[in-house]
Image 1 (cartoon, rainbow, N blue to C red):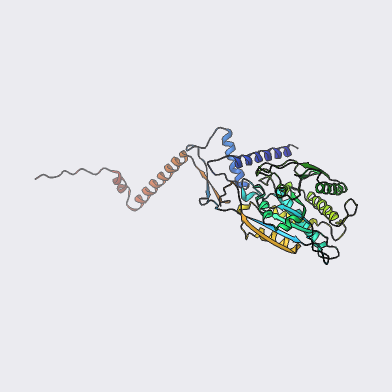
Image 2: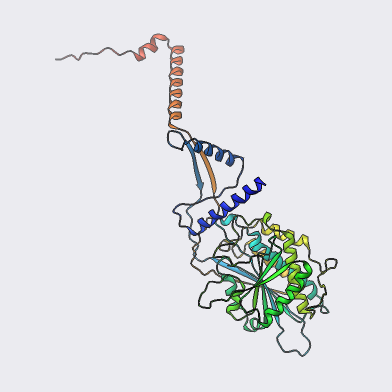
Length: 441
């Protein structure tokens, strides 16, 4: 229990430190290093000296840290990449009307004070994993015309999530107007890997809205079967304020009904709860992601196939359409090892290509949109460096070493002279030569 409390305390301090680093204007660089035996030994030595009031000075000595890194350069135009997958619904002969569309969206990037250490396992790695598994499940249904639904399914992996969901906004604006108008509603997945037994549906439209009411009832019905509580939270958006708290609010701005399913009950602040140093694999419950996938997939499936309100399990655990724990685990492990701060992900980044390929395996058509990140943030290109730690000795040690070396050289020189020329020659070296008088004319 004591150790657990110590871990919680240290994590709280680290979270507070990270927020300070993000929001404060520091005139010097801050580096993070991986903990190992050598680092621990140095820290122990520093703490010991600090405890006795022995601060590092020229007299006492200390440590010198050198980071071998070139001068960071400002990134002129930070790029963002959105990936879109499309599963077309079943059209009947002579049906000229546009089929309705349901969008499933998740922002895949993250943010932290140390970009190279920010993997965002829950925010929003869990949302990405859930989206990919949902796409895999529905691809099996839609691969057969007999089980293909009369709804188009649109999957969006968006970038720029921590920066006001900038990528989502640009992706929506780039969509064909007919596709955007065909969207019945969108489900945004955010931080669904927590241990809580309660999930929250965040909406901008009033709960009395027909689509919101229908979707919430569908989710609530499935959640009850899964033993999960789902609560609805309504928050109006201010059109005059460009700041959005949830991804679905970007949909609401273009008049598309949308919701965000999240384990978070409160909207995070800017650059808060968007990954960070603490959001690692050990804080994510794989079973929670499994539960969220089952909740969303089953709710959408019953809506698509007209089984809303019926206790009909489409994605039963003992069927070929069961949620795959191994698939979830493998992708969660990959995301938990991959830093995903958007400005440092190039268009040909292996992770971007992996997402594109995976979504392409489960959808009929994949499109990639590349754009420039808007905002007031400035990014620099150096994210990693090699740290070298030198132990600096005290001045007293230098003087002692100089005395020892000087004495050694004198003894060595004397020994060589005695051996080769004798004692008289050695004495003669140190004897003052006789003065010579200059003769005058």
